Image (spheres, rainbow, N blue to C red):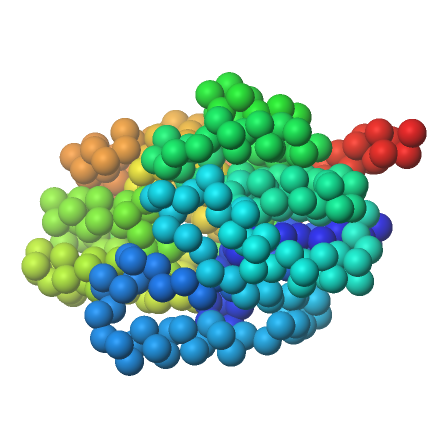
Length: 398
C-alpha cells in the first residue's frame, strides 16, 4: 500500500530538527512493509518573527537562498521527498485562506506528484493549510485522507486567527480520520472544535535508541536537569531558567534544541548570572541525544501548550522521572510520584518545589522505563494507522 505524507513538518537540509516525529512515523510505516513518500512545500515568505530578530539584509538573503536552493525532489534516508515552493500570506489576516494560496502556487506540481506516486491514502500533518488542502485532494483524486493535528494548529490558532468555522466545515467534509495523539487532543478536536471522525492514535518513540542503563546518571552530588525541545515561547524554557535562579547550586540545566528564542534565552541566563549552571547544547541528532538522557537525573518540560510531548517518552524510556507542566496531553503520561510530578503551567515557584522534591525522591527508574516501553511505540502507531485505513477503505470500494 502507498502512503503519501503532506506537511511542512519534516527534516530538510536547512532544518534537520524539523518534524522528526513525522520522519519516525514514516519509518514506522516503512518497517511495517508500506511504501511511503512525502511532499514538503517550502515556504519562501520572510516571516515577521524571523525578520524582527534578524534585521541584517545579508542574514535574510542567506536564509532565503538556502530555502530556494532546496531541490524539487530528494531522497532523505531513502524516502522520496518533494519540495514545491510557495509564498504564504500573513497569517494574522489570511489564515483561513492559506490553503488557497498554497493551491495557487503549487497545485500543478502537487497534482503531478500525486499522479506519479499513485497513493492509496494521504496523511496531512498540521491542520492549515495541509489538512484543509484535503478539499482539493478529494475533488481531484477521491482517495482517503487522514489529518493529524499536531498542537498549536488545534489548540491555539482557531482562537487566535479568524475563520475556524469555515475551515472546520472543510475538514468535516473531506477528512476520513482526524488522528489525535492524546486524549486531550481527541477531546479538544471532537468537543470544542466540533470535528468529526476523530480517533486516538498515540505517538511513539524509538525503542532501539532510547533505553535505560543501570549505571547511568552521575555521582558528583550535582543534580542534572535536562530539557529537550524547540526554543520557543510555547515550550517554556524561560520558566525553567527562572526556576533555576531559585534553585541552589546543586542543580544545573541543559537545554537541547535550537529555535527563534535562543539569543533571548541566552541573554536571560546572562542577566540572571546562570552561565555556569545552564548549558545550551543546540540541536542533537538522536544518536547523540541518548547520551544527554543517560547523563541527566531529572527531565523537565515547562510547555505552555503541548499536544503530546514525545520527548517525555524518550526521557522515561531512559529511566528519567519527569517534572512537567499540566499543559495539553502531558498529564496523561505521568503518574504522580511514580514517574514524575505535574506542575501548574507557568508556576515558577511550583516548578522549584517539584524539582526539589524529585531530587530527593527514590525513583524506580527501571519501572519508569519498562512502563513507557509497554504502552508506547511507533510500531503500535503504524499498526493502528493501517487498521484505520482498512476500515476507511471499505467505504471507497463500495
